[in-house]
Image (cartoon, one colour):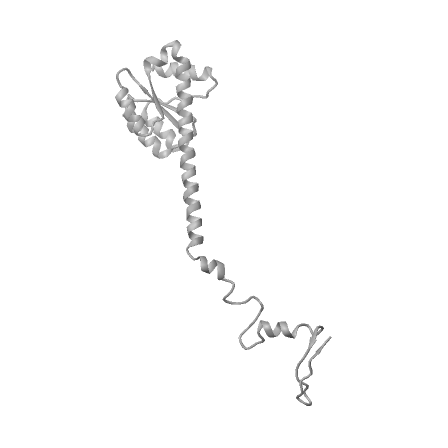
Length: 193
């Protein structure tokens, strides 16, 4: 179409790499293939499909690329409906061809890209918030177990039937305190060095 050719020329002059789709099925094939784009200009009136349906299916495959709907004269209501379905903006065909509106056109595309980037950042923050919340609530489910988990069984090697940690401490290494009963007499002999 004339509008599609004009858009390609306008965007390539600005340094963009442009891929063209002639109908909705081609657009959806690219979406399913996962081809990354910064921006998709999507016509509301495609030869084989409704542009809003293509928008919906494209959004299922890709929610990070900015999509701007291109609407013919008098299709503003449809373009607004498309924005409700996930488009990041819309432009009318007659505004594209007017040479005075090129700066406004480019500004509109930049705004759509920024809008989508903001939505993507919000989605990423929501995922981060949900993950953080999950970690915090997991740790708080059993705070006593986390705080007092080491009290159940001392890490001194104490085994039932063996010497207690207090007995081990009192016994020491024999350098500071010698105590106990003498085997021959049974008398106590406590000596500190």
